[in-house]
Image (tube, rainbow, N blue to C red; front, side):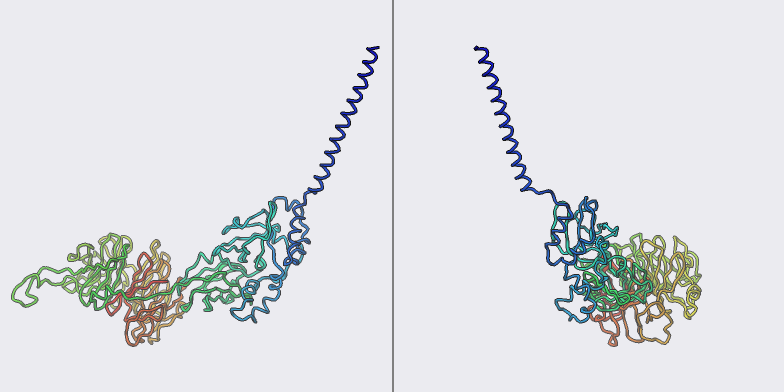
Length: 619
């Protein structure tokens, strides 16, 4: 009985245990189910990137038009899977684009509407024609503002390229300003607003990043403008800089090269093609020539200065022929006079004895000057026997000199110490020396000295072959050379022209016959007129700067000649009183402008007839 009772109790107990365990598990299941229901209620299924983005755009009242077009784009989740960046246009921008061309002309200068209308003007003005064009404004990849760095390229869903430009901390897409703060962003997308339609190939556009790198400019210099949809005919591109028209020298669909006008000042650059106008995002800086007189040199009492050179330490070397002196002047205001004396041979001062006071000057009438690669000073002048020659100084030995070239022999070629010469311009050319003769009707206009030998380098016949209208024997009064190229520029006083000579030959760069002594005038090539071009140098190893003494019309000026032969007067001008006056550009006046040199900092120094040196700084 006990066994039966025990087994019966055991079965009852197991049944109860099983039931209890079922109840427990069922209860757990109910609890988990309830929790799962709560969880699903609290966390609905994840939205797609497209849905989230559309919700963001829909929630912004100012993007109604853009949002509608965005939905029509029918983007796939595959297109959005790697993240995207959307560039939007507000309703106001879309409205501006449609009315910009009409209202921009009527908007008064300085009005609040003008900046945004200018931003919209020049776009295609068409909005988004269909959903596919919307993909021009959606970029593969999710970018933050810090990712949009200068010159970065972005590829749109439609396959077009957007170039990022950063100017003054502002971000631009193909020249169109991006508003600084993103409208919205998450891990999958970012949304930014634009100030106008993005400039693509069908639109007139400027590469503002490249334009910013090309500046600053100087009057008479050139500026390269990169962009889109220019005319390849120069005359069909109207370019202005702060309202002043610039001459277009070269044109293609993507590049213009213009000459900066003499009157230009810092300001916005505009390009107009086929009645479409686009402006630079930032002002283009123009450096103006500021002319001042070096008082320290005036104190040296020079009567007139004819030649000038400058070394790598910005020490000036110049000639004062009226006082038979060559001088130097360093940045600390220390001067040295190079005036060597010969051995006393007779009682020159008639005091009854022959002594040091009777020592004759070795060099009289020093004129042209140049600095050789050997660190020595070369001066063209006359010896005590009145033989035109070239002399050589060691800088720290001002009372000693070497008679380096020249003799009584009038042979045109030969050894440098037995060949006659009448040097009026000098140019150290590496290991050789060029000198221009002052002989009338000479066969050789410029000779080269190499070692001990003199040979003809440039002939009168060369000039006649280049310009059949040339009627005078050339008188080369100034010569200069590019630093790292065999390209030379020559100032022809009698011919009133500027010539270029390189390995390919001789070229007329600017100037024409002016035997009727017409006033000097700016222009390009033979349309430009000179008085007497004399001193010549290269500013920034790029632009030719010329001293022009138009004696017949009392016009003494500094002129820039660029590589296109465009001549621009940048300082000085008509001066009947032959006075000197400091100032900016043409407000300055010169009492003669004989020679010019440039230092390592691109400062210009002009030697004048009144014994002064005028400094020109572009700023």
